[in-house]
Image (cartoon, rainbow, N blue to C red; front, side, top):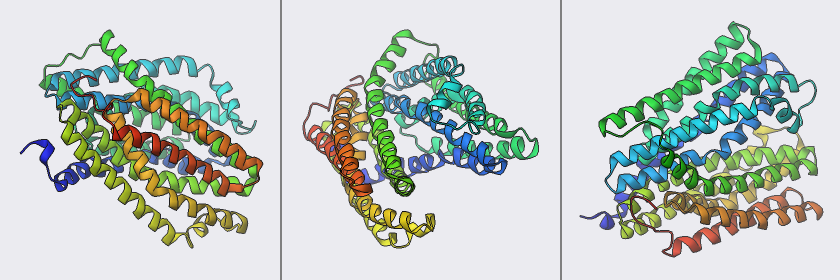
Length: 441
């Protein structure tokens, strides 16, 4: 039986085999910073504030470089679909070399600018020294963090999401042990927390390097840097970089507008957005499966199979979104009380969660289609349309603020942004231009 004639149950097994471990790895990643926060919080308010500022700066750097994972996944998966494992490993290694090079550049640029970066994030004089210390030390872990991103992309492209899950769990566990040792036992302060995370990240990167090198030996793939390969990896990732930057603008502007609305509004918005983010991890797991599966099917020149699995993944996105919407509506009466005793914040969050719930089915479609087009290597289209959706969001968010529409108005602007993305992604998916077959797009 050919790939294109597989029943939907076979597609379901394929999707879940990749999505479930991917979800576990996605949830494990934020535990690094949560662990640091729990331990650094014992040092006092100012160190904890410094961790928060430095953590945001580091998160921005890593967020912008997520193309290292996504672009590598798509490229490797295509070669796997084409049956050329040697080229797949070679392309993955190019991505890891690019990650290392970018990481070294970020150290060289970021380390002397650490005080300016902390100041740009608005740290107070009491918090700034702690933020500078944590950021200056943590920058030495940036190359490892980026190699982990690229290594994750290699394994996803090879249709393996279990190993990244195991590495994430191991890295989190090591980070916890080292933070306790360095901060609470050896009394190294916030610098100890940063060094613990750097070592854990380096160990995780070493595991990925070992796994990929072992695969390279098995398939006789060269491991030295290749200038042409680095250029190809960088070019393929440029569209995804622009897409990610446009997404980041929406997140930053949304938080900024909520903060200008008032203290109660920003508190309620942050909690609501954390609920959104948690659910996004689950939807993103399906999108990651979409990246790996789509790239493999297109690499195998199986257009019918690509169509069939795309329909099935969109179905999963819609169903997941509906389930999440019902779940939020079910727990909505009690959820605000878990986060705040402030009546004003409680009421704002209660109202916001209704919009968050209603947006989940839309988010399910958007996340899945985004992942599918990433897997197809359609980075230029994603960059342009994400930028257009952001342009739709910005005046809507500003209008909501000026009209004193409150958080409901801001979340409505986010809903308009998601609707714009769903329309542009849906139109692309309905056509054929994104389905470019072959080992290389």
